Length: 406
Image (cartoon, rainbow, N blue to C red):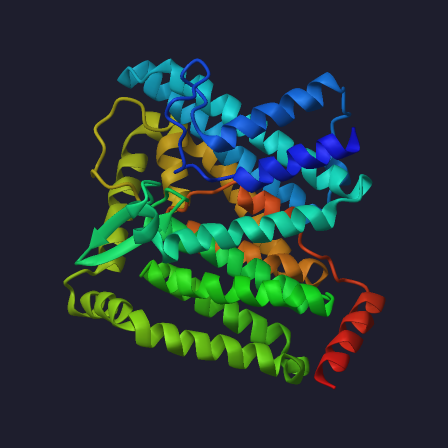
């Protein structure tokens, strides 16, 4: 049973979030045409038929639990609450509710199994290797999206002011992808900061380098701000042991410089548009926020229950997740979101869980200034961050770094 569970877990993780890859000729009641759904169903059947005990979420560490609560709230409670209202007031198809509920609940449920049983069945390292390989593939699909497009795998391509922003197999828009790649960058930094063997560190160097390239390729100003914030956080956390990271710092700076020479003009163009007023997204988004807040406080039904059949104040959604939740979910769901958001902020600044701040920071900033797509990789990566909180682990890490410099 252990090997069967391991194999299905690897296949599930290996196809997670490959939502742009379709098998058009294969459908199950017209609901599961995507490759990631196929293996999630197989793993779910395996868990059910073998009566594998449900993992107690309380046994997971606090950051992993709140990652789950946060993602579960948005994917399950909030999204389906909004969808039910759309079915009632806007004649949305109820089959979409069925598809979303089952897909998101199943995937979150299975990720919980993988995080918990990877330790019990001793295949945590195998899952981590699978995660790293898949993340590298996802990033490469963005960097070389034109090639994947040419062979018919259809990555998402969006052009802004003549700039192609390709998100590859992710199928997100460029701003959401930039946040996603920053989460990967933070995951690499968190692992780099923690103790790991010399053989493992090179894969994280590659992951860090590729994620930096991908963030810049998205030409997202929010993504660039998050990238710089993560670098500053890394330097701040390790200022007393900075000499042990000289090689890593030099590599990252060289990559940043090389990428800037390659595509830096694209980012410069967008920044120039921002300051010239040609594309002042900050002022524009503040205007959206004011319009939506005005509508919320002028209409009691929106304030209490969220938007139903009222006319939207603007065709664009507010680029602030708190306001978005308030407008579509009402005050109750907004307060739940605010509680979860502030708990994530608290966890991020806690010295006990400081490794998690590297993947929490992109979500925290992204929620405040944008509208990120919270992928299932967020709880997955949180579940496989190496917790290096004890003095013994720190000494092991320090000795390994010293040996690496000798």
